[in-house]
Amino acid sequence: MIRAAQSWAKGCVALFDIIGGTKIEFRGLEHLPKEGPYLLAAKHQSEIDGIAIMAKVAGVVTIAMQELGKYPIIGRAMKKMRMILVNSEGGAKTRDSLTIRASKAVSSKRPILIYPEGRLVRIGEPSEYKKAIYHLYDDFSLPVIPVATNVGLRWPRRDFIKKPGPAVIEFLPAIQPGQEKDPFMEELKSTIEGRSNQLVLEYK
Image (cartoon, rainbow, N blue to C red; front, side, top):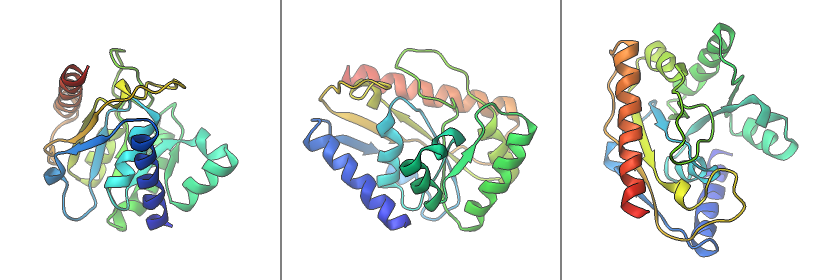
């Protein structure tokens, strides 16, 4: 099922190029560890960015809102791919559930994709980074790969109309385990936001 999911994701990215006129360039692949587990903390501008990361990173487990699991087709597929569905409202109970479910991916040495903002965010829209990423980083002592993007230029959040042109998803140097919460969160946000803004200006 994992290989099938990656093949499906690659097909979606190819169609986005052929039909939508947007070819996604992947940068910074050298920053991805050769083996898992590790955390991918990604900017979330579009419905396509997570699919694109799935197409490029073999075996990635995505953390998503549990509401998505209620959709008959999507929910069934996400469960078969062993995606981690959590309550987006947060809290101690959500953290405990996230840790338990993430431990299975960690023990299987699979990368884990999480969106620190916890939701889709339009380009230029301010947002807060939730602390779930820090809890995973701290609980499992895993490196975090920040992921910047400008895909929202081509496939804006929940917009039906797509805009042709090049786009980039960039994997940045890892933040190694061992930092305290506040310095970690500050570095993560400034790294992702700063590079994403640069990519937007590069292709706007």
